[in-house]
Image (tube, rainbow, N blue to C red):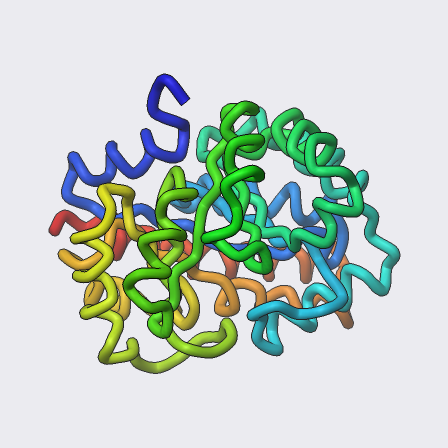
Length: 276
């Protein structure tokens, strides 16, 4: 890319203001794509800098029970890829924050790599996270994504050896998704002690922004990342609210759940946007 991507611009702006970028995660199609579209808009209004949209998949990759259940609810309603793209297309132009797709390479491969990337770009996605595509083997796909002016965000875990991290980073753009714990997604009370060492090591290997996910759930944890990371990713703590809609999706209850999510996301956004 000849100029900074939309994602890079977001992180640069927050860095200039000595703030962290905030990226909430939601699962597409839970309970339906109309609600997903509304949720994207609500999160943007609540202060999200980017929004990560998970594409439901039947075989969990690193998803904890909360996100697995959300994916299952969506798939049980026969959610299709075209439904996700059309639903995101309907709202993407109404929000200023970039959208990032978290999607299994199996879905991309089955669709056709070129076709999937084109459809994602047309729907309004600015970047892709593909957790089951080994980062150090992603050069060809990274080049394809770049040709369509999107970012391919790579994941690095606490267990990733330094030499392998270096190979992964060669195929990364936008930012680096730093996994806070060795395990699956899910809210946790405390950050892993080895996280700081991992972030310091990555700082010496790349100039890309570092965003931390897996287990981040409170403003206090966001504060602990100040000076270490450039962004925070919150997933399970938001997706858990959608469980309540499985048994009651009346308009009044929907409004109440949306309000809860917006208030929670707002608290994380305020913590992230407090100057360092």
